[in-house]
Structure formats: structure tokens, C-alpha cells
Length: 431
Image (cartoon, rainbow, N blue to C red; front, side, top):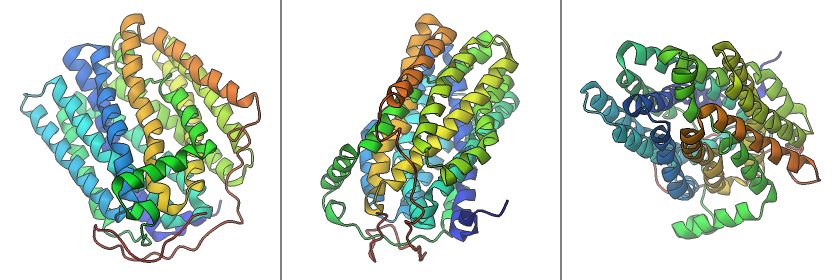
């Protein structure tokens, strides 16, 4: 198989490697947060507050993060966000090592880290089209998403080992190191300059309103957000894994790390298929709906698995279907958005793509606290199945979505980015 064209891009390769390193630490810390809070409180409902911290930050700050991503140098904004997260990780590591940490400290750290990520994610996503060009957006995301899954695979495994060896504090310290590595890597990435136009060059609130109007008027984006929420809210499984590993399967911290990593392993196993679909298929909408339906089935299988190996197998399927659906959704949003609006549109979209799992953790944590984790996830699995069937039953923009038109592309001329201030230069559009 020849080397994909996108991998011949020096700046994408740098960006890709830095993101993977940072995400390993981030995903390991997320797994450690859930396990840490459950260990401190022995409460699924309280563990769900980890998701609540994420949800609050995402819903309140995402629009502002997107507006800044369309106004300032995205690379510098990403570096600042990583620096803030680095400080938070170090603080939590110190509190844990000195044995003064309480559950609310962990929840607060999640809120602060997610607050930084609301500025990080829009800039991170908006950088991709600027680096690789519109024609290669799908391929770039098809590579980045499995790479993220590498992080979600290795991160929880690393967390499980480090927790078993020295407790969650060591995972938090490693996370701080990975943030520092991405800051350094970003210093060598070149991206085209972007001149804010329209409302983006005016007031912050006007800029946010312009992004919101664009999202509302794009039925493809709003429909993808609804489809995303059906899976991430109704079938949220992350918050249930500590209880499933500890109380149902009795496999401890190391087993929890394996179970948490299995969805990412499934996503990696499906990488080649996903890449070919987003590159060649013109029936991506139907593939998306099929993957969403099967995601619900996999969630039910995970809930009903009586042994650890059946649970791991179900989690592998869960990850592969989730990766297919996520890649198509993310690529569609980037393709459907002009460059000068990508930061704001990405921010609004992440309110569902990242806010959905956070809200799902709260909802599923509370529900499981009443009926138990197995019953809660079984009932939740029917959510994405029913929504996918609803979209598939009639013609609509999601079912008929085909992907990017190969005839559309734009030249990318990387230049050294300016300092973190409003940028100038030629405006690049992706329409």
C-alpha cells in the first residue's frame, strides 16, 4: 500500500506525533480520574460528577474557545491551553502524592482541564484543514482518530499499571510531561496565516453569534450533532467501567485498564477499513447510520457480558463502530465549514461530540446508581439504535451524505506562524 499523500506533509507529521503523545497522557488521566473518584467514594453517582465537571466547562466555554480560534493564531492558542492543563496535572499529582487529595479535588481538576480543552479543541481541529487542504481532510481525520484511539488504548493501560504500582498520582505526573512535549512540538509546526473576517474581526459576542447562525442553517451539522448525542448520552459507558470491573467482573485496577482500553483496540483494528471508506466510499451517510446502530448493539453486549473476555470482545466492537461513525461525522463537519468559521463551528460541534459523553456520564451514573450498571447500559444501548433507524427510514442530509468531492481542493502554503495576537495575511477559504 503506497504511503498516503497526507503523510508526506511534514507539518502534519509533526502535529500528528505531538497530538498522540499528549493524548496518551490525557486519556490515561481521564481513566485515572474515574477510578480515583470511585476508590475515594465507592459511589457510581459521585463518579459521574467527573463527567459533570467536563460538561459544565464544555457547555459554558466552548463558544468562546471557538471564537478565539478564528481570531488568534491557532497554534499559539493550542500551546497556551496545553500549558494550563500542564499546571493542573502537576497540582493534582502533588495533592495525590502528599495524600491530601479528596474526591472534589479530582472533579475540580477535571473542570479546569476541560476548560482549557474548550480552547484547545477548536484550534486543534481547525488546524487540520489549514495544514493538509480540503481534499485530504477526510484522510487526515481518518488517521488522527485511530491515533487518538492509540492514546485511548495506551492511556488507560498505562493508568492501570501506574495506579497498581504507585497510585493515580504517578499517572497525573506523566500527563504533565506529555503536555510539555506537545508544546515543544508545536513550536516547529508551520500553518497558513488567517485573517479574521466579518464578525470574527469584530466583537467576541458577534463572532460567536455568526458561528451559531452558520450551524443552525446547516442541516447536515445539526443532524450530525443529534446523531452524536444519541450515542454519547444514552449509551455512555465510561462512567460504568470502574463498577463493572470492580463489582461485576472483579478484575481490579489492571483489569479495569484493559477493559477501558479495549474500545480503542477495536478502533485501531478497524483503521484500514475506516480509511478506505472515507477515501473512496460515496455512501458514507448510510455507513454512518449502520455504524451508529451497531454501536448500540455492542453497548448492550458489553452490559450483558458475564465474563471478562466477552466484555473485552464487546468493547472491541464498541470501539470499531464508534471510530467509523466518529470519523465520518468529524470529517463531514470540517468539509462543510469554511476556514474562517472552523474554530467556532468546531466549538459548537464539540458541545455535542465532547459534551455529550460528559453529560452521559452524569445521566448514566445517576441511572446506574438506581438500577445498576448492567441494566442502565442495556437500556441505553437502544437509544442510538432507534435514532439511526429514524434517520435511515427516510431521505435526509445524513442518509444521503456522500463525502468530499475529489475535484475540490485548495493549495496549502505553510508559513511560519506569528505570535499569539490577531493575525494578518491572506484569508484562506475552504468552500
